[in-house]
Length: 280
Image 1 (cartoon, rainbow, N blue to C red):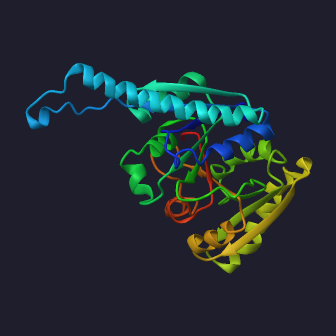
Image 2 (image 1 turned 60 degrees about the horizontal axis):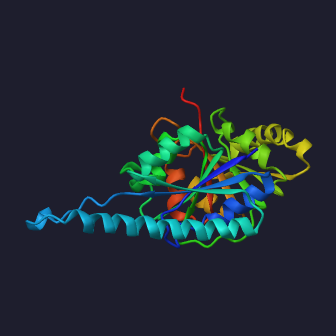
Image 3 (image 1 turned 135 degrees about the vertical axis):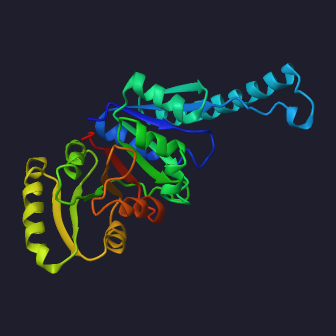
């Protein structure tokens, strides 16, 4: 169950796009939305040009930043409260990624929902973007949606990527908890390189599908052959959410993944739920 859903936002309209997704999940799961913004104090003081910014002007700048952030949070909070969703709003001060990781460690959210620019794929993750840091160093699953993509309004159809490994199956307990709340259809998806592998892959997915029988949710099995990237792109067009695992060791698992995860995050507009696997 998702009791606590953390939604980082910087106050921009783009960063607020995940809020409807978090709201739908909170309503389906009976959970709380935790809105959090981080105010990073500006480092520029004017010394680069040979003069120092007066302390009162600097403080006024900081106060204005915090005031604007507070107004944006209060507006979002009011929207969620109008939907009878329990919601809290918090302003943190410091470096964005580190502050959010500290907050996550303290309050243990069950899920993080946030936006990513999605312009340069894993390059942003490797360079330490906020989203990348939370995926790489956090403990909670992270649902990532691109800032350039509008939410369809539905989380009915989940596409769950598997590769036959126990590591990839670590997403399944979370998928089970979302079955029916809100998932109405779960598609178990595996790509194999050769036609000769299709039968074994299908048998494997049948075994996985059996665990969803008791949920009453429509479960479909799909085995495709070839390059995972275009295959997943086609499958994702019919999904509201893509679910896959990450390595949890600083990089993405190769699910025949690896570059596949890069493609999903960079090339697809479909929201993606990344489940961090246990270190091994």
